[in-house]
Image (cartoon, rainbow, N blue to C red; front, side):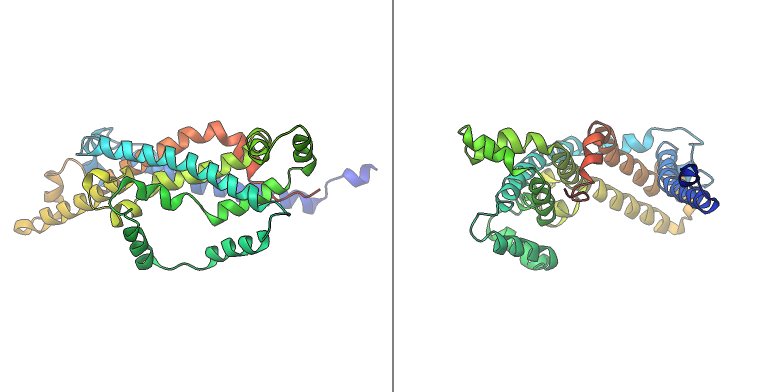
Length: 302
């Protein structure tokens, strides 16, 4: 029996290799983020000299001040909060209702609807037909273009349906005996038992809404309806254009142009990344437990 539990030399080497690969993977994620942190809190002109890796050389908040004091920043922040909060809640709830319906084996045409939804994951109409569709239903240049088109995701729908199928049918049968209808079963039984998958889908939706700059850049014309990610992307573009203009004016060299700038495009870029990523990092620890359970969806079958 002792021989069975004895670890062989090959197994030890395998564990060492696995731990080494995991360590390298973690470093590949953490070290670039530390570099972004150092550059975001370092003076822009000093950062152009190079040599900054994981700690600021000249501490400065000018990069964040330049970003946070720009015009429409508060409005853009409010729009991002609105679309993230409302879009996530509505999408999770409606997707869960659709997934609960599709997991029923007695619903007529359930197989057809499942295949139809899966088909949308493989093919898309393209950007131009999508824009024409949004324009025809009067969603372009409105705040609802951030919420309504993203209410449903075929991938999230299939994930939720898979999780709901693992909930034993005896729970629903007992509830029906007690007089519950389908909606009551969904609200009082299915949803409370589905916290892991809800946490996963909510996190995916929230991150997608918060980081989306494409919708605001291409489907919205009004500057007052720009979300935070779109506004920050436009600020970076303007900063780079301003730097190029300074360098080209009167034959000015790159170093002479830097003397006239308090921040640079690269330093603003790093500060922008910190601003965009920070809310997600602060929220993640509170749902980490459910997220860890949710990523195992479908891995175990009874």
